[in-house]
Every structure is written in C-alpha cells, then in structure tokens.
Image 1 (cartoon, rainbow, N blue to C red):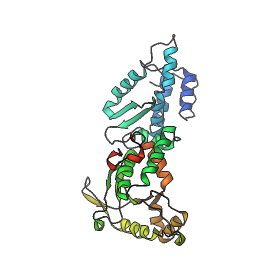
Image 2 (cartoon, one colour; image 1 turned 45 degrees about the horizontal axis):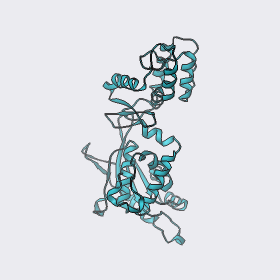
Image 3 (cartoon, rainbow, N blue to C red; image 1 turned 180 degrees about the horizontal axis):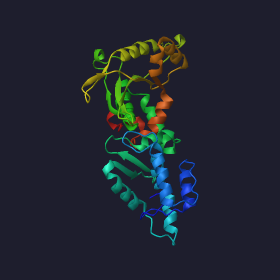
Amino acid sequence: MVVGDEKDFPYRSGPQITRFFKSCGLAFQHNGETRWRWTYDRLVELSAGPAAPGLPSDDLCKVISRLFEPDDFARAKENTQALHPADVNKAVETFNGLFKKHEIVASLDSAGRCFLKSAGTGASSESYAQQARPLSQEDLEQRRQLAAYLDRVSEDEFIEKVLVPLFQGLGFRRVSPTGHRDKSLEYGKDLWMKFQLPTGHWLYFCAQVKKDKIDSNNASGQRNVGTVLSQARMAFDHPIFDPEANTKVLLDHLFIISAKEITKAAKSWLAEQLDASQRRQIIFMGRDEMLDHAARILRGHKIEKPLAVLSDEDIPF
C-alpha cells in the first residue's frame, strides 16, 4: 500500500517513498533497495514503538493516516501514465478488509483526514492527533461556545456534559461521575475512570472538579484550596471499586480541574502540603487547557441554537 503496488493506491518510486516517510516526520532514506522489501522492513521497525490500546504504534498510525492523503490521490488521478487508477474510498475499503481480523477500522473525516479506531478497545488515533494540532477556526468557535456555557452551568453539569465526553474522547474507559447527591460516598472523587496501557494493565484516575477558581490567596476571598487538599487526601485514602474487575483498586493519579483557574499560589500550597509520592500523582488542568482539549475533542458536538436561548436539554455533549 505504501509503495503503491496495491490496486487503488498511488504508486511511489524510491525517491517518492523517502519523501513520504519524511512527511510523516521519519528520517528514512531509500537508496535503491527493492521498494517493497525495504518499506516492509521500515514498517516492522515502526511497529515496535509505543501504541494506544488496540491500535498500531503511534508512528504507524501517522504513516497509515498519511497513506490516505487526499492530495496524493488527486495527483495520481491526474497522472495518465499511472499503472492503475487511485481511488481513496476504495483504498480505505481495501485497508479495512485486510485489517478487519485485527479489529482496526480506518475512516475519513469531513476534511479527508484518515483516523484509525480499535473496535476492541474503542481507542481512536483521532483523539491523540487532535491533542497536538493547532486550533482551527471551527475549534475556536467551539471553544468560545464552551467557555460561555461553563460560565452558567452547575458543577454537576460541567462534569456530566463536558468532562465525561472529553475523557471518553481521550481514550479513557468507564468514565463515571459520582455526582453530589450522596457526599458520604464520594470520598473526594467527582469522577473516576481508567486507562489501559499497551501491556494490558490498567491505570486508575479520579478527578476533583471545581466550577470556581481554585485559589489560596486570602485577598481574593476564595481560599478554597484547603477543601481541595482534604478531598485529594480522601481520594488517595479510599480505594475505587471497579465492577469490571470486581475488586477494589488504588488510585494512580488525581486530576484537579477547574472551570475557571488554578492559581500558581494554590498549586504551590498544595505541593507543600502533600508528600512527594502524592505530588507525583497530581495532574492540574485549568480552564484554558481544558477548553483547548474540549474544543478539539468535542468539535463534532455542534450547538445549533444561540447561547442566549439554550436550555440544559439543548447541550448535546
């Protein structure tokens, strides 16, 4: 497929194969070796790299996504001397037919970009690609709408309608909000989830979520960081029950998330109060970082009505 000997894929000469890999950020140089054999060996090398659960290695995901670049197929169609016609939709069908037994499915988005999804784990290369790319105009508009929505919703709505789909889109499993109806059973955990490593092992995460600014400055009148600390300690002290494993497990990492801001003073104070092992388990996510992630991951969830007339039932995420 990479070299283009397969029907429906653009043909690539040796120099074109080198350019193809360089466009994927890979410094491979073809020097006249048999095209398919040399390319096969490079792909085997890449398959040994780190990978999301159920997906090929990160580098292979880049190669496969680049394999269906619309411009390559457009140029191949214009080439009257091509050995065979190139058709991106048929090429995707061919790929999916070959990788069906591995439960890996390739699909094209509205812009013609290719992403992979594991039918087994639900992991998608789209979520990992979205984290690194700059925000588009559509992303920025979604970010603005999300920011306006956060300014007027409750903490539970923030968790259930924004954070739950966000973490699901990032590849976490069993993303479960605890809610605030029964504080005695929450144990400092507004949200819990798990993430599978390439080895098959699981890491367990919880989130302590605040709608308001997290600050330790007395002058601000919002010295709520003490509450965050007590809830963080509670989260570390109480295990999580995983119904899939039918056992209690210890927390690996704790997200501290604010719909507004987590000040540097609050972060420093928390770091001073927690022991070294607990500090390494804390992950801070303030408003800007959270909105940047959500704008990419939740871009497909369009808000059809103007924000001024939206009700809770109108928010699709």
